[in-house]
Amino acid sequence: LKVGVLASGRGSNLQSIIDSIKAGVLKAEIKIVITDKAAAKALDRAEKYNIANSYINPKIYENKSDFEQAMIDLLEEHKVDLVVMAGFMRILSPYFVKHYRNRVMNIHPSLLPSFTGLHAQKQALDYGVKVAGCTVHFADEGMDTGPIILQATVPVMDDDTEETLSQRILEEEHRIYPKAIKLFSEGRLEVKDGKVLIINN
Ligand code: GRF
Image (cartoon, rainbow, N blue to C red; front, side, top):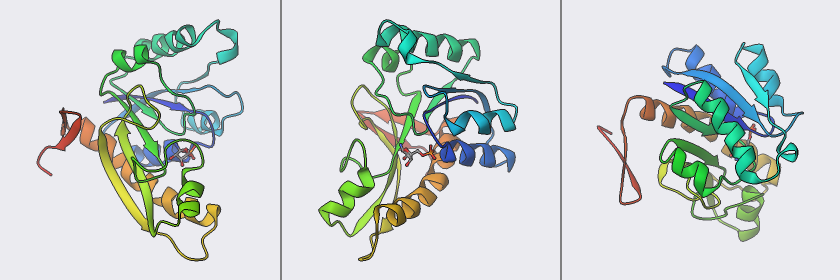
């Protein structure tokens, strides 16, 4: 499986995917890491493991579709089968989504459909939920929407801060993202009526 990773920041989810591949658990190859931020730590991580990486500056493009076309060109050049958004802080256009329909995954630090968008963990704390978690889903043209692949829950503690809760959720992210990609690589994810069926689960 040839994977392309889109990231904007720290890249800890990228790291979990790299680790899973290195451990021989996930049979895949990250062909390219693309960021929309020059300072994204994800670029350093890619560099460290000799993974092709590219910063694409959105500001030099006239519009969103030109920027996305530049990403698609790179992904196609690397013959990517699956696009993995790992902390990529942009919403994909319908054009991009159509191009990679059910071949783009995203991870979000909440139990979707609750708490979409930014600061999902803080939204969960502010609401007072007793369980929180994360979701891996196929991305559609909405914000944090699309067929759900895997979810994991964590308890919310009375003394949690945004940081402690985020950390607890992040550990689950690092567990389920490689797992979801593995299921995809094994051809075990089927999308039917907007829902994901896991074959032989
Ligand atoms: C993660 O919490 C992810 O769920 C969210 O952005 C964060 C990215 O973290 N979409 P990292 O860059 O993978 O460390």
